[in-house]
Image (cartoon, rainbow over all chains, first blue to last red; front, side, top):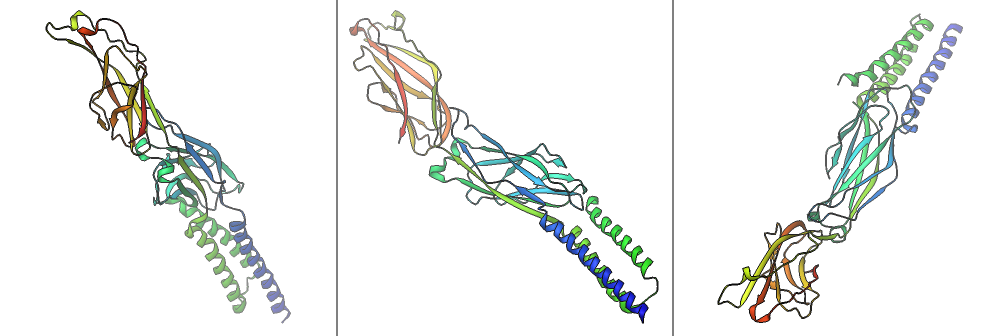
Length: 162
Length: 194
């Protein structure tokens, strides 16, 4: 009887241990933000060349922060911009973990496209950051924002198992 | 594809540790306890395996706004054009003598709709006539040749939102009866609403 009680007590301890392990695991997955992009950006094209094109604008003010995961992972990018008129591209530069994919042209409704691939598994679980290099361009024939409105892209980054 | 299994392998390795721990502490089979432990192991397996198969770890977004101003840029390739009417331009029996120049190009870039280009001169009372014509424009339509005056006249129409070039043909006309002399024009091209 005592042996049974002792075993029950031990089992309860193990059960609690496993539950705590599960909770800790979930907490790590949810609390430590796996990916983060900075604040919103506005890019303005204001000049052009006669007989040529409008002058494109580059923005490198935002960083993408991400963490290694339990499996080798990658980050994809997609956008939603229902009334898109102009061209927007994005490239990951100074990538500490993983390999940057070629520059991605962001088109409304595009499927999620590889942005950073081959992100190694943890450890460490520390935050890693790369620079987001956005390039906005337009042709004269694409018009202007006063007549056609701004392009407002909701750019989504997702980290997932590769 | 091979990398996707790494998380699962880690899960299996962790489960192996737990199995060895349980085997060490619960060597004797006790059915009820085994049920509890099996349930826990299955839960943990689902948790760990699920993450590896569920694939998505996290997502975030921000908004990127691209705004394009109304841009109108024009350029004339040559700063100075000289037209000289000499005896070589004269035909016996005809009063008018003409000379033509095509050395100048006009370039533009306009992202605003319904625009045209006009031309005018600053010279209110020239001795001779100076005409202008757009030749072979890459976009839009050349207006008919006009004699320049201080009033802006159409040079290029229907250019819309575009970027392009055209040759500028200047023609100087002098009548024999007007004698000799020279005119110095400052020709101004303007983009305006059509």
